[in-house]
Length: 109
Length: 119
Image (cartoon, rainbow over all chains, first blue to last red):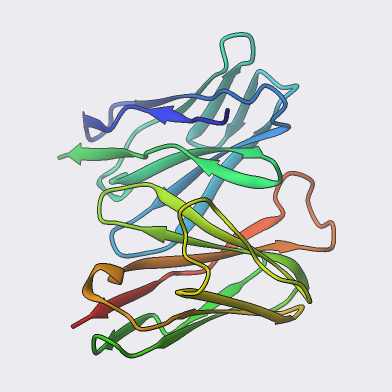
C-alpha cells in the first residue's frame, strides 16, 4: 500500500543545515515532492524531484533520492528562523498526492 | 505559478447548519480537484477527489452525505459540510490539477485553506 513516513520534529540552530528525511513505499511514483506549511496557512510547493534523478539542487535546498531504499531527504542550507514550519514530503499514488505526517522544523536563534 | 483560491478563509457556523467552501482555479482549468482535511499538528487527510461533471470519489470512512462535493465547472469545486457539528471543526484545503501541461511534475496547486469552526 501507499505510506509515507517522516520524523515528527527537528530542531536546529540558525545558520546550521537542516536535513529532513522521508521514506515512501510506492516504487512507481514518478515524482516526489516537498511542501512547506507555515502556521495557519496552506501548502507551499518547495521543490520536487523526478524519480530517475538522484539529486536536485535549488538555491538553499538540496533533495536527495535513494530509489533503492525509497528514501528522500531535504537539506536546507544556512537555515533561518523564517524556515520554521512543517515540511511534508509527498508521493503520487493512484493519481493522488499521498502525504507524510510532516516534520516540524524549529530554528533557534 | 498557478493560483487556487479558497473562500471563505475562515468561517464560524452554528451546530446543525450547513456551510459551503469554494475552491477556484483562477488562471487554469482544473478537471480534477482534491479536498483535504487537516487537524492541528497532523497531516493532510484526503477526503475526496472531484472530477468536473461527474460524481466525486470519496475516500474510505468519509461520509458522502455529510460532505457534499460539487464540481460543476472547470474552475470551481465546492465542499458543503451539512448539519455541521463541533467535531467537523477543522482546516479544509483544496488542490486542483492543471489540465494543461506547463511544467512536468508540477501540476497540482493548493489553495490557502479554510478554517471551519462549528459552535
